[in-house]
Length: 165
Image 1 (tube, rainbow, N blue to C red):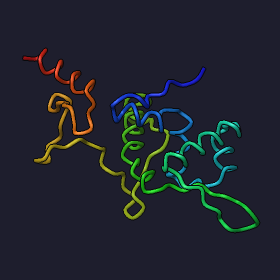
Image 2 (cartoon, helix red, strand yellow; image 1 turned 180 degrees about the vertical axis):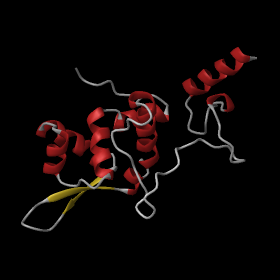
Image 3 (cartoon, one colour; image 1 turned 180 degrees about the horizontal axis):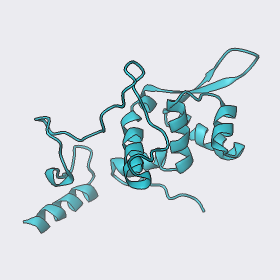
Image 4 (cartoon, rainbow, N blue to C red; image 1 turned 90 degrees about the vertical axis):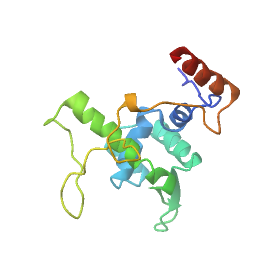
């Protein structure tokens, strides 16, 4: 069954899901963050079929998240490396891992932990903070139409504001 495209939705989350919303894609990115670069290594580590892997890597390259780089040895051999756009996904993957550690596996049952190379310590959990540095919950936040909002988005946020008044 083909995936639904969200390219027509005026929403950053929806449009991001077009690039990242597939489970294999997120696992490829996880492995790329841990240093996997070659097609055969992704295939072996993930147990993914060649055609699915090729399609996901191609899409990640097309979205500018990975770059396909000729490693320049033994003829034509390519590696896939994170671009700055891909590196910027570190907080996204970290938040997803932290959520899974807490709500899927439970504290003390994490499948793997991440540590700082220099100190060996685990980084502090991600927290959304306000301008004053305090931790925020969803109740501290509100959404509003932004500068890139289309008319549908402006109406949706207008209805929400009117309903609360």
